[in-house]
Amino acid sequence: MADDDAVLAFRLRNRQFLAPFEPLRDDGYYTLDGVTRHLAQQTQMMAESRSVNWLIWDKDCHQVIGVINFSNIIPIPFNACYLGYSLDGAYQGRGVMNAALNLAIDEMFTKVGLHRIMANYLPDNHKSAKVLARLGFVKEGYAKAYLQIAGRWQDHVLTALTNDAVLAIPTQ
Image (cartoon, rainbow, N blue to C red; front, side, top):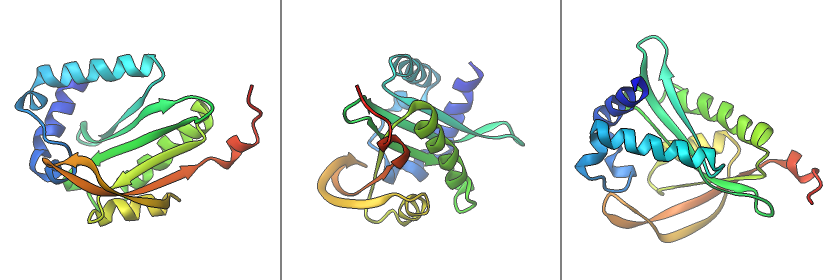
């Protein structure tokens, strides 16, 4: 239950800051019940190997400051997933997300054994563009009206990172 409270506090602190980068959320998303339901759904999807979700904690103040989600995991022959993430506005520009994603991506490649991670961002989201480029993600395309963000269909830059070590693993 402590995670639920910490995630709710993160959502409430960052509601306005993250709104331009996320789908529209109903008021229930910003309640303890909404967080509890969402975390239960994520736990179920993790048990089914359909997603892996991380919370980023500030150890000094014991609060959640970010989230990382590897979702829609598709097994062989695709062996890939989508990456989504968000970081508390107060922690932007400190390298926190870059460090957390480095660890999380390494885990997904080495322990989960994924071949490909895809991450897409709004063309004006220069911070995400820089984070993904630093991590080695390569631009693969541009999708018009790709996702409904902030209440309207918006274009996205499509990127991906592949794990070359997985290429050498024989498949069944």
